[in-house]
Amino acid sequence: MKYLLDYCKIAGNPVKKYENTKKYIATGDINENEIINFKEVYYNEKPSRANLKVERGEVLFAKMQNTVKVLKIDEDNEKNIYSTGFYSLKPIESVETEYLYWFLNSDIFNMQKDNLSVGATMRGLNNDGLKKILAPVFPDNKEQRNRANILNKIYKTIENRKQALKLCDSYLDAKFHEIFSDRPYDESEGKELEKIVSEEKTALKRGPFGGSLKKEYFVEEGYLVYEQRHAIHNDFEYAKYYIDEKKYEEMKGFAVKPGDLIVSCSGVTLGRIAEIPQNAKPGIINQALLKISLNNNIMLNDFFVYLFRSEYVQNKLFGFSRGSGIPNFPSMKEVKKVKFFTPSIDEQENFVNIIKRIKKSKDIINKDIQNLTNLL
Picture 1 (cartoon, one colour):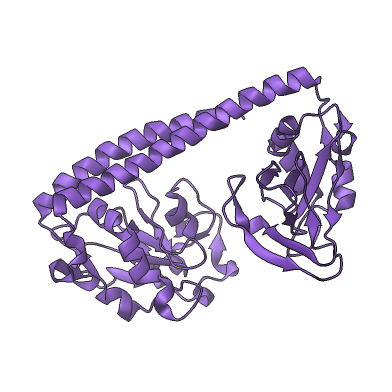
Picture 2 (picture 1 turned 90 degrees about the vertical axis):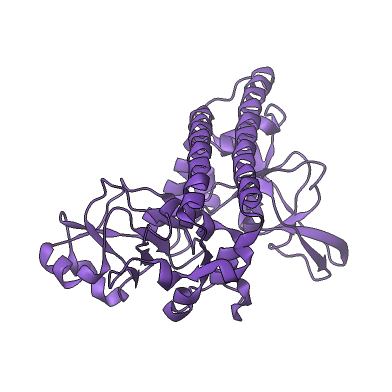
């Protein structure tokens, strides 16, 4: 093993006073290691650590713990500037930029970065930590290029599979509009949410106040407390918090059962929705979830989930037109009055059959993506 800084050096030069317009790269502007947003900025102030130039051949990586964002600097983004949320590394002559890029994307690097991160609330890698990062001995340049080429091909294949997933969604949307001829946007054909839920008193229920579920109430086994993670990732194997039977009986109004839908109610994942599966553990929702129990004689779960995930419904419920730059969960009074397109059950069943066929295709593609990702 050698140190990472045996293969590269920390780069970045301050921007000179009165320099021309530059494009600014921040960690939030990168998604899946590609720039998704540039900020046009003018720099006429004195040189600053916060205004550092990058040049072709350098590699940026995010300092923050658990943040895997790496960017190769090529002719499209050379001589731009970047925030102090990044380190910029310049490879030495015996190191290929592409190989360094893939090392910085590796688990070997990211595990060390997280372990060496410092800070109370915003943990990140500093210079002392960077100096301690170890790397396996890099092969010669030819072998580095060969390995990087293989990894690039795998990555490209993964990107193609992701594009296939988007095409599946586009096909489903096209079929929806073909079958229903754009009727969902005619609210005269919709029913208010409170009219399509079951007759149970708690069919539409927001989670309890946070104080109702303090840490001292949690036990090692018992009734599961469902969290946002379950709605966000549709992951019902995950189980972290439980309450005992006494607490469960006290909070039974927040109980969920198989077939109920749960919706995330806060943060950047606001509006994610998932269905409680048949084999799910009995339990209650926490304060960050909404429970919906539909009347399946009026609305099928799969059809509702498709509608709920649509841009139309998401904007209506969580859009930015609510007077804030940050989407917020609306009041329950507003939620109950949101209208959902409600065709006949036969029409819904026909479309749900298409949803299920598309889901099978997406499951195969996702499995392929996971297998390919394991090779990186």
